[in-house]
Length: 460
Image 1 (cartoon, rainbow, N blue to C red):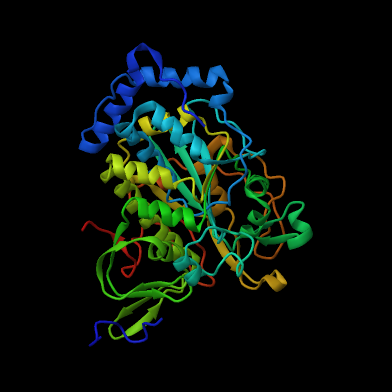
Image 2: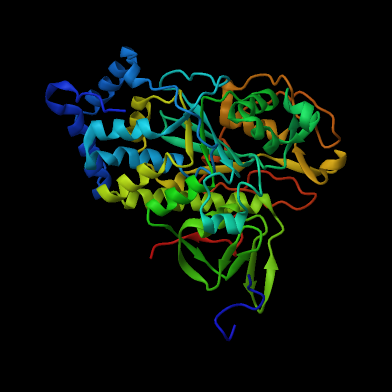
């Protein structure tokens, strides 16, 4: 490294302001001040703000339920949703209720016919989709990942299920590896066969992926957030980048990652996306390059770290300019389902304004490797009963009986076994993470720390 680089390192109008003296603007402004100073406490007129939201939903005014706009390009990795909620609340500093409403109406919406409505105040599940759609990609990104003309269609690069429990202010994230084989539904089964990778079903659209997950695993989906390449890059750039510490130089010639020196790095644009997409991660130690053979499992670990770093960055950069840039970037490559209500997002911001990203619990669906599916090559299949134990612990009584259960390691579908919830779900343990997978190993929840070569959160 005499030259400072490791060898082989190539490479519509806003609504009227509420009456009663602007009470809700005061409540939002207080929330913004609280987040900027970092001092917890009760938001002024919090009940008034929630009451306003209830009146908004009850009014069913056409202005408050915008629809009919064209569908935007489908979405990408959501390290964005919780950060969006945090920053949305803080936007009160820069303009109050009318400004928030204006920005909410700018968000792209998609209708999800097969999502279900969660009961008020009860836990709900968000399907977070990271799309590999290249539509709207920057010139640098197109060079690194391929243009929309070179890589057509869309697949779900990331499939995460966020279980949000307002009463306990907790969030559990379960990632489904993209190579997990599931039972295809019509019309996908006509194109992809009876069984195929879960990421294939997103090519038909977000609603098809919702149906596929519910049919295979019995998980009702209440909301959807999609983020594509450009949406991810724009959101990170609007925050001024995200800091991550690399213990060693790192690269991935497939994703375009190229970290030439160790230490705390400010990641922006295509390099931030390259970290989140890296499935062929390499690090330089003791004079040569080492390869991380965990593939998608290693990527999921790094995504969890990036997610926490991005949320922390969003909370620490609450000022009018950053808020405006961040929220203004969300309509470019970020799509939410049209079932989200304005007051619901504000309520989430109030509930989670003091959320510590270190408490974000992440797990990966337990799987085993299989080559029983002919032309699909090496893929992953669900590992029972471990899979069902995780689903019961996370989603509880909301689970339904699957109509089209996924196949096992031998290519035979089975209904899941009957499982009793554990006394202490593994996701409530501090530091719960992901198992490292080999070609034949089963992936199960573990408290083992991530490998030492992976990047971690850091401050400049």
